[in-house]
Amino acid sequence: MASLSRLDLRECLQTLSVLQWLPVYIFLGMIPVFLIPYFLVFTKFWILSVLALAWLAYDWNTHCQGGRRSAWVRNWTLWKYFQNYFPIKLVKTHDLSPKHNYIIANHPHGIVSYGVFINFATEATSFARIFPAITPSVGTLEWIFWLPIVRDYVMSMGVCPVSGLALKYLLTQKSAGNAVVIVVGGAAEALLCRPGASTIYLKERKGFVKLALKTGAYLVPSYSFGENEVHNQETFPEGTWIRFFQKIFQATFKKILGLNFCTFHGRGLTRESWGFLPFNRPITTVVGEPLPIPKIKKPDKTTVDKYHALYIDALRKLFDQHKVQYGLPESQELTII
Image (cartoon, rainbow, N blue to C red; front, side, top):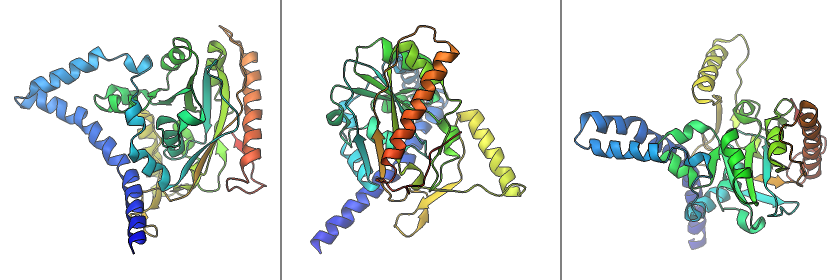
């Protein structure tokens, strides 16, 4: 009974670690969006709002200049519970030399990109031990860094804007041994994610290759097997009223926040119930062999296309070598659109 109780407690903590994800971000987002203006105009605590806005103005460029990571935050025990919920695993196939900088391109996006977050924005899977002397920075939407408190929280985990300015700074203005992590398919790819799917946006996504050429950073393919399995996504039939409203919501969210509104579901608080928590299914992020890239100040289209094609070949090879081991059938092919 004691053993059973410990297992129940562990599972409860794992579920709560994932459940906190959305409420924490909503709460942190509400503080600057609602409380700062409210304090400023309607209460005697206006000085708190002034100080928060003054700090934001003073610290405005930090997120584009390497951020302000915290080893303490990246090593929170919370992230270990989060990792064990699925579980999530990081697999190295080749060493990354600290003499170079890297762009680790990840696929697929999934609904939330749990694998990228846990493997590269925390130490739950021991990134620092697996890739010694390499400092990872995960790219995300820039508007997140416009929010006081939220920006400090995400910067503490080594998260940076997925903008040319911020990524180029990390790859050129700091010493070697830096790796920026980009989910190349972006928010648009989230709409393709569903169990059994291996479809990614990559054919026209060449900006990361151009950045690699401009900075001389090596390209590293990575694939998160299982990322598409943790939620079920619904795309309603064309011509129905519910599909009409789904398209409106998706277009609105994309325009305002740069996010695609996915109609998805998973499990509830218990394993057999319905809800929005992800299913307990393993996610394994396999990091492939670095592709050496020459440094070219102004790469032409032909050069970009050449290395983009080499990257696609390397990604396909990585996918084919590991797909069966991590749950996909031998016949499964990586579809690139």
